[in-house]
Length: 599
Image (cartoon, rainbow, N blue to C red; front, side):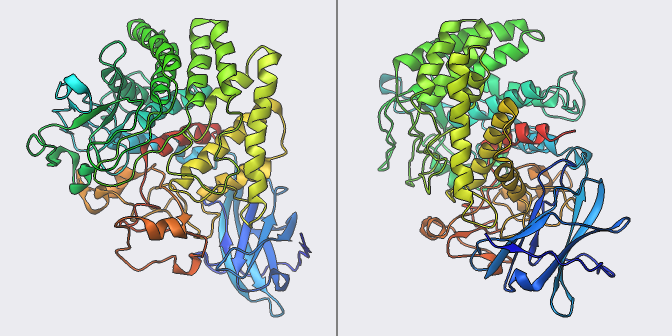
């Protein structure tokens, strides 16, 4: 790596801030003791550029270094700008001046302070998005939807049987509901609360309406999901996996007016698919299920952690959850394999292939709930079968092939009081982080995540695992990779765009046209986009993926055309569902990362 000279001349007047063209900074800001870096991308060789960091109040600060970095097409050059030694809180400007005349090419404003995230309560924003996703009763619309769900399909003699499965969340910007992503959403919310219990507000009631109820909002949201999961487990050994299918996409509008006809009349009820260990689908397209454990173990882990956290506030609910968790864990062990979601008209579905990670997490969580060491031992045996989540370090994967994207079972076992268990699992966490970090060395952004569909969810998963590993071990080896992935989500990427939908004016560039029917609506006299605040969009995909998907296109000129490369694309455009659609589970996974940044 070529080291570049930092040319010192004191900065003269800094022009007004304008949209970034070549400098990429974390638009939320940097904590005082963060590993701090920015990225330059452009057509000019950075050897011919003076980079400076200036405080309007305190003058120029010394950068730590500037390092030439691999170019990111379509940009010809790139450099990484390091300034961890700048720890004084305040507003700053990074400038790029060309040689020999010193003319300003670009400037980017940034903020340093331990309140970089807490000053705007960004950790609460994912809950805003999830309330908007609620099914059954939706507090945003103050209306009920999908009140006739649902009737069983692909269940042999039970076809047509009705189960009351109202509730839960819509999966993304359509109205399908999936147990795998919903259970992961519940667990992520509970995990974030357990790890950071003191940072959560109580501004909404259990129904998601304004007004406190004595319960942190994150637990209200998790309980909304847990109660729906109980309905998806209506009897012993009956586990349901999915509500509706891709016929849903025939309708785009507010959920209470959903008029799709699944054979019983418009809006008259939606099909409910059971967890299945064999390939299935109602029409031509089928999944590749091999067993039931992946889904049923997700029931077990969410129920177990929910039971632990509701023991004091609602002991009857906690007792029921504990009973369900233990039964689901036993069922999952007896039915190994992965149960995938069901395609219908289109060939797309969640292609989950792994399952031992789910049983591992269920066993580890149950061992903590019930104080049964045998469950921890079993969990360790399952975990050893998949030491590293397979997407980590890989160049590609199928859609949700390795899910959940972060193995929190590894984190629980790495905390074990038994060194025989904790030692290998700390190494497993390290190995996954190291693989992603190593892959990121090939580009200027130090970004090692493959550009598959929902790549941003993988980025959050990586940051989560890196944080947990670092905090468990004190090993800071991968701190640059960890913060680079976090910075990526907040604008240090080729497009200079935050990947989380944020309120107008909070950052320089946030998704304005995400793929959701809400975007074009006015709800309760507010722009519909407001209700999407806190959601994380799918993120960039390989150009080949974008070009191969059904129906994906752009409805307006691409404001990021200058940054689209031969490898990956991202479009802030409603009609690009592959890169700009917010997702429920990805958004929920933000809660741990963001709450950990609250100082």
